[in-house]
Amino acid sequence: MFVRVKATQNSPRRSVQICQSKRVGKKVSQTIVRHVGIAMDDKEQEQLVQLAHVIRAKLEVEHSEALPLFSPEQIAGQPMRKGPKPGHKGKPIDEVLLRDCVEQARVVEGIHDVFGALFDELGFHKIVEGQNADILKSVVLARVANPQSKHRTAALLEEDFAIKLPLDRIYRMMDALYDKRDELQPIVHAATASLFDEKLDVCFFDVTTLYFESIQEDDLRGFGYSKDQKFHQGQVVLALATTEHGLPVGYRLFHGATAEISTLLECVQSWRSRFRLGHVVFVADRGMMSQKNLAALEAAKCQYIVGASLHKLSAAWKRKVLDAQGYRLGAVESDAVWVKQFELQPGQRLITSYSAKRAHKDAKDRERLLKALASRLGKERKYTTHEGKAVASIHDDKVKSDAQWDGMYGILTNADSSLEPLEILARYRRLWTVEEAFRISKHDLKMRPIFHFKKERIEAHIAICFLAYALLRHAQHRVRLRKVHISVEVLRNELLRVQASVLRDQRFKGVYRVPSSMSQLARDIYGAFDLKRSLTPTALT
Image (cartoon, rainbow, N blue to C red; front, side, top):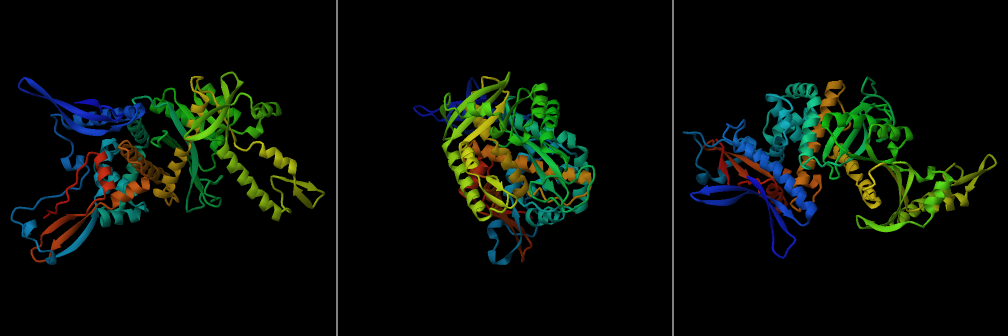
């Protein structure tokens, strides 16, 4: 098999295909094994070609002469559907009368068809062994479909997927998963890195907190600054790194009292040794900026792009930043910006930018604050000055001083000078992808609140959520390469609607599967994974 890029005459469209050469006599013909997608520019072509190489390698393994480890149904991620047994009492499907049938169950097939196949393709079935691998797969898919407690998950697996899984077996699987926690992240990272052909050059880093329905403390749970405003409950600190499209790079758990500013260096050192990260630029918000932290990163020869607080600069540097001379006009994601760069010290640059869109937002925010101050002058706020002990008034000079910074933003970096200021600004603005990752993890996958209290189960719970997040992001990325741009919520909901009714013939006791219809979007999702789904009713038993 080989990857081919076929151009369209008089059009920018380029078709990326996986092909196979077959010899018939003296002639060699090429057949398309799989259509990967359409590229409209060089960047899209590079991404599709890399994905095609990953798929090609897996197809070659599946088509090798060695006996497959799984049945074709398992490889395709489809539920096992048995044909009619010899001598069974059920009537042939074309002779069944609808009035004699009752619905026995309704099963969600879309989640298993797509995410089940992807689970195996990414290598997640190798994390734990034996029956625990099947249980892990079922629990992760259930987390993707309808995140609930482990007790409720066991019930939903039977209700929605026709999978009977006792709760104690789920807990035993979680204990096995904890033992394999050091092997899990390299597998997830390898799945992401395979899409970049070892060209992963930027990681987006951020930290959040996950709270418990508990006030207990131990060597993992503790009290600290809560981003969910749950200061009266125990928590853990979760650090996460992703690519610019939100694909997972790695994560790490810290004690709940850990300050986020101290997590970056520890994570970087851990991931560089375990994942063999090369010259990767880490992007983080201004909460990670401290001279001690940045000095440690530089000592570790790590490149960074972090937010900088312009208000904390010296008076001399502030005058240089506000001087309009030297600013150049450019565009970042359709936003017109003026950028300028300074060398703060050897090897470290300060990139400053001005955006009219941001200036409008800053002015509106200050206006709302001033209106609130007008009605609450008795309380100390950002723009007030005290006269005596009990009187406060708005300080006009402070308001004017603050207004001159409207639309301004600063970024610190030690990245190579080949990275232009506009490119650095563009990378920093992509930091929202890791913030979105936390939103998906917390809300779509309901990673918190955490109800487990044993350290092993807590870490296993986070690992299950991380695998579910990885599946969602890889699926979204695969669909995006087919020019279908949808959120993970829409992706999941479309597949939840791909169902089948299990009907029982009350007279002749036959059991039949009647598939639901599929929307065009669901068909597009299946097409991105080269999956086909028959809409013809079939006999099960």
